[in-house]
Image (cartoon, rainbow, N blue to C red; front, top):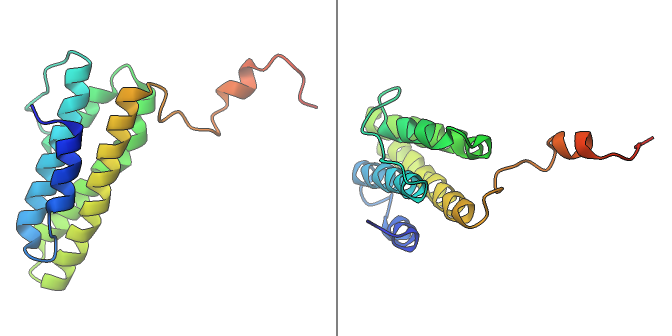
Length: 141
């Protein structure tokens, strides 16, 4: 099994400008491995299913069960899938390179979020959530 540090190093080693198609495949594979780490940390076996054509989205769905704060990375996963489709669906090198470069940032964000969440379970709870307000016993006004 690959470590979070190895995933981060793998992301940084990819040059999206050299070959965007290879880069997109690599980013997607590393993002899946990131979600697999999360699932293994929860003693779950990662699914091989696909959601909307992507294993990444099925892995996210599996990882989010029972942990609403994990949904903080849902849009990151969806954006990775979208940009993957842009890279593989375009025949223009400039569009492929731009989309693959965006995948760099998204894959890094996902890896950092998951590795942080593995250290701090509450990571992903939003600061503007109403729960702290509802649990505050003092009258605000």
